[in-house]
Image (cartoon, rainbow, N blue to C red; front, top):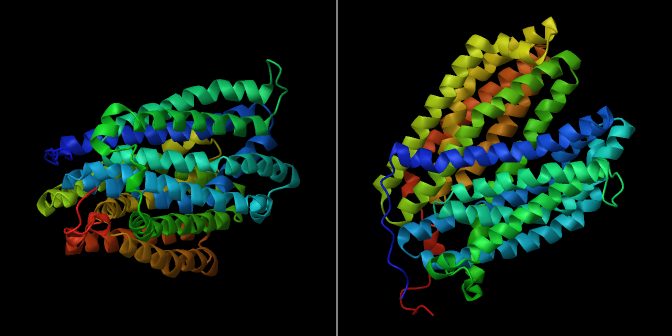
Length: 462
């Protein structure tokens, strides 16, 4: 007999925050992993630091499509939990792990193209050599990131966001001494420089995956979620994960391309506009992390309530997450508007850089609440399994609005960096409104990914 269906907590603001805040810290831990690599390279050389930063971007380019696709495990697991069929979650996560293996093979086949992609960014030869060395090691180690995504998405789907947070900080704690050892050498290991930093990150990821696997196989997980039952891995489950998940991955990959084009355009405007651009981007990262976390919380809660047939609860969960995100990011927008110049001065004392950054902070302030709306609306739709509409909407807006406006406002009309940021602002506003319109339509409430993977009613469960 399967376990009794769980009694879902009401999707109150407190419940949303309780799910979201560990995701913020998980993202912070991931950021610290990258900062650790860059920090240690600063003690090696400027070229090494620049190369490792570029290598990280190249690595993410190779993994974005596949990692984004595998995050759909959260949706499937959450809906099974809500439907009381949590004993099928093991089949979902193992199906995802199987897909991760297939994706890993594809990544390894494309790894020889790392050097070519590095050259696309146009760095000088010394930086290019460092970036290639670092990126090759990280790309070869990407299968560990895919496995981590599967296991973390499973935990988030069942409503456990704190465990991934703890594992993430454990990985950071391991990455620091490994960097020191492998970058500078010791205990019989020669100094490996940038390669050592890449090996340290891969090793820390590997340790995190081992811990997550052990958690997947613990007694409670085996009993409630049947996490050791490979018999539940079915072709229809694999097909459903791909059908619902690929649009997420495609959206991630194409969005990264458009933002790379954005930064590439600004890079050609000179050192000062680029410096101001990077200052504002760093601050925006702080503002949208809680937005992303609330989006994850919305996906989990909406999925659980949709799985339980509670469309009203799903709607309440989504709107509560949306209100919290708008409130937080609206506050950040006000800070950018009022204190943009002061913030920029903390990064750079050049008056021209500060002046440009102050103007860019105004654009950033203008789109904060719309960015929150788009992110959480996307999370609501993903929780229901409505992933194709957000993908199509985002891709069309990116290539019909964002990229053309970068060229039109930034270059054709000669507005430079301000024009490119105006284009980004219009794009984010349009995407936010389009995705929110989909949420308001309520069509997503009739979606259910569990219907795709449940056996027919006339077929007895094994």
